[in-house]
Image (cartoon, rainbow, N blue to C red):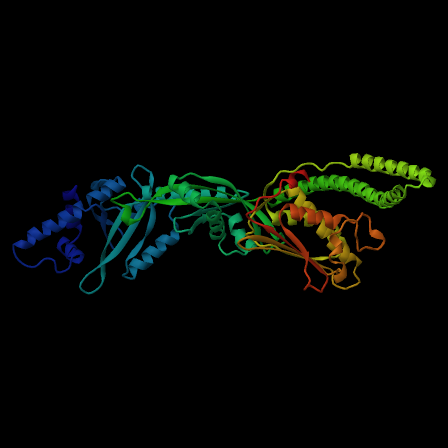
Length: 538
């Protein structure tokens, strides 16, 4: 093969000149020239790159062994033929035009052609063609070097197709998905994730949710990461800037390890850990659950209010009966002390009335319905206040009341009765709304805040109503006292009940004496004390 190619080259050209053009000044005069020439020819012949030499019209004058292996043509098949014998119509004509324009201007052309193997099979050729110039700078020959890159191209294309397929799959997912490396950098994401960047206004969403997850999970995060164990159903409430100001997301994640592909990992295997994080918008489900929860609470609160209405009515009636009963008891004591037989009949009548009254009170006492027991559990005051606001949402909206809801974001839980505390705050907020509606002032404002320190949880409920006069502030916590005209619809036990609930939680309630723009109730609860057992029965 070598002899055939060299002989053809020698026959059709001045071979020494061609070799000289390939390697100028390589050969000098003397015996050693032949050895150097032989070594050079052998190198070109055995180099693992397909090499061909053509004349100015692209007629093939020389091919090496690798050329024959790549193209399938033997020297006797290809020598003397035009290089176009290898061409395939799948290569655009513009590529050939660019090729000839470049090499004709004495420049090197590099590119890819679709060539045809002798067997007819197409292959991709990574080709470099360089013009060979004589001493005057004129083009005498062209040397071409090319490699079959079909397999490498197909492998690269498969990788690209797989990447596109993966991207297509995750982009079609209805949930936000993102792949994060061990430096918290986003490697891959989908369209739904990209939408969160602008919707949430939290910077990089992955960074934001990773911080929330690490804070919530603590040491568990590192444990799961080291064992490559996933997590799911981690729910977070997010305040966003969009039309849906409050949104809920459920987070799930799985860690996986992938081998590195850089030069450092060529001789030694190196791997890198990644996290695939999914962010599911569950706002709609949470709102449906919240609506169902609020409806349930409304039912429970309605039943509770019905029971408490009956209790207040009976207690009020008993209170009204006790007043004349006390007077009758006093009259009886006076008559009995006189021991006057003249009034014996009157004394007997008074005793009968007193007995009837006591029987009536006893009967009403038996009719007072009991309040269901509630468990003492860790309670989130913010959640209870939020629920009570939702319960009053219709009244708030219909009266155009501006609500300032300012809870402390990380309020600790306290031990207490959810239902009793819900009754407490509903009573106070109901009173505030009533005061706002009855006020002649222009501002319709309700403000609720929560705070804490090392020992106490603080709740403040203030309204822009008319306020409570200083001389009446101590009396509003007394039974059957009300500041409303005509006594309102209840018997004046609301704030008595509120104070009772606060006391059962070992808390404290007062009307802020320094607030003069309406009324402000200040409630505080201890964080670390046990709740009275009485809370379970009331």
